[in-house]
Amino acid sequence: MGTADAQQFVRWGLRHGLMRRFLVHRARSGDIGARLMIDPELRDDPYPHYEQLRAQGRTVLTGLALNSADHAVCTAVLRSPDFGTGVRAPSELPVPVRMAMRVARGGPLNPGEPPSMLSVDPPDHTRYRKLVTRAFSAKAVAALRGRVEALLQAQDELRSFRRFQRQPAQLARDTHNQLKRFMGTRAGRKIRYGSLLVAALAPDRVPLPLRRVLSHAVA
Image (cartoon, rainbow, N blue to C red; front, side):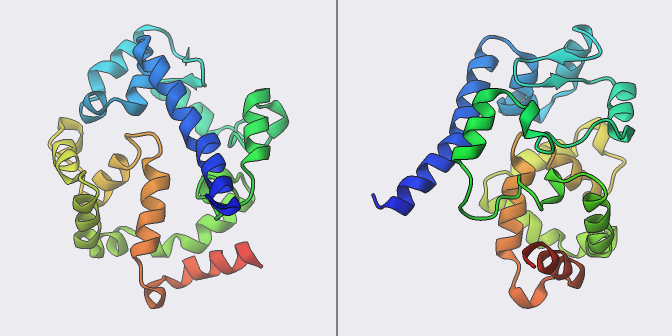
């Protein structure tokens, strides 16, 4: 194993491996929040388990982060300027997490790190969102339905998506909104499919707004 391979292995272990082991440990101890993130059975039909989470309180500390299945709490947090991404203030993160972030720096651009929209706060997030809004309209996403479902099939998740579509809460939604919600039902799925979808997109098919964001990010 060369130096570059060793560095990549260390980065993967710190970014994903240790987190996975921690979540597995918490899930085995009965932590509903951890199970919702990694247990396939719960991901396919999470609603009864949301009720278990609500029964524990409006916010529940899982050992990793505060979780909530309370609509009012989630709405207040998402709309409040007092909350943001976890990476905007690294000094407030636990010491082991700060050490992992420092050691794991470098390597390929990660969708979970700035300038990804998942990891930036306003005003940067607002500016990026304006640039890509047209590229991700309902009409634009609907046109990609066949290619996205083919990608789900290649990842052996199309059957899970079909079950998700049959859930009562999803029946009234179009495929675009079903896909959007499906991507958020499993920890790491948005980041993983973000990379897969970009890799599947031919260079000459990259939407102009997305090209502008990429150009701004690497400038």
